[in-house]
Length: 598
Image 1 (tube, rainbow, N blue to C red):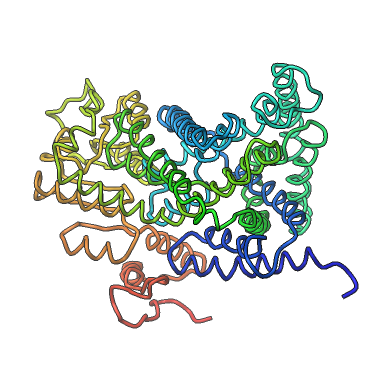
Image 2 (tube, rainbow, N blue to C red):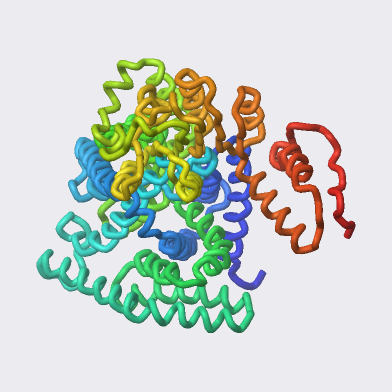
């Protein structure tokens, strides 16, 4: 060929290897991110064979960072953070501090400077958004109390890292790295940096908040999807570049606030959907470019240092999170799940490490150790979740240990004053007050049916009690909690919590207290539903099946079909699972009475 094809070759090799290794990781039930990083190692300078152009890889990585941070801003929810602020805000701050101190202390023994140790420790302190959300989704925990706390915790970590990206360049000279442009005192450099950031934020929230949604609305009215997608990408890339060129703000920070501004628009969901393919594609190239910087020989050359890094990520951070959650009087189950969720590092760690090397605040050796820690902690994360489940069962089987770990919740574990406990008869006990439980509680209240809520989110319980509603704080699978709800006199138990293991524990305990109680349980699989119904549960509800019935009912109405919905419901519930191919019945699907072909 008569022209340079370095960029095309790098993209082709990067995507190709990322696909192959990402697919292999998925088949091994590992996050695909592990495969993407290994693809980068394969095309990096430390392994034989094809070596990608590091300069081109660096620019592709910058685009990946911009789109990753744009996605973080687009999905940033102040409401989600405020809902669990009392635990997530102090928890994240304490854990970041603990991990940073451990990382800095370890690096000090290796002979690094305190500035290098600070960047190194910060890089070990923040979990991967991609890995955490995927782990929670796979276990049906996103809407649980544990999931909401972990996501709120992650939001605080992300915001703290955004702040670090702003301040590190200004403090670089003081920390032993490349001094900020213009010299002068540290206070002046920090003040100048913060002044630029404030000016940028003022422009974004005064002008951008109005101008960007207005522009997107005008483009949407054209009906051209291509133009709309192009406008979203132009906003993300344009604001990121403008922030860097005009205000000296990093690409990452500019892209983050571009996403925040668009998130307030009515078109935010469409913008997210259109930008997602590009975000995913360039995020893959970002992880590939990060993998190119990893020297696998560090695993052989410095095994003890790698072990120290992994122990900080998996053990140190987990113990810190576990202690913080237990200190706030949350159940051991919540503490273990939050700790397991955060026992890994990812994309923000790579962004910080890259900035640290640019500012001469992190040696290449440190970057390799961070990458080794990320690869090993992400790979081990499914095992950590399994260990957390095993630990929870062990704690449950050891009442003295459970009582020692779980500090009494005080008055929140008892019905609030003003509730006539003697009048609580034939009432409903509702486990969970989230997106499923809250509408159920509202419907019961509208019909005048008495109920008691048992919820693991402390802030939610406090809010319910402030409204005069009977709510208890605690883990309903623990003996004693349900007794305060007077389960022995209740008629109905509603388990809206998504975790199957917890639901089984709750049902076992409920039957010991009240063998005749009726129960309706939320579950996420046909196998679990079949098991629950065999054990005598009145109704086990699979969310996806109920959604299908609602859509079928609406579709029948649209076409004027007068089908027997009871028969349709029975048939729908017996269809095989599209993912596993298994169902409750092998009967052949029959046409719905009254339905028409075509």
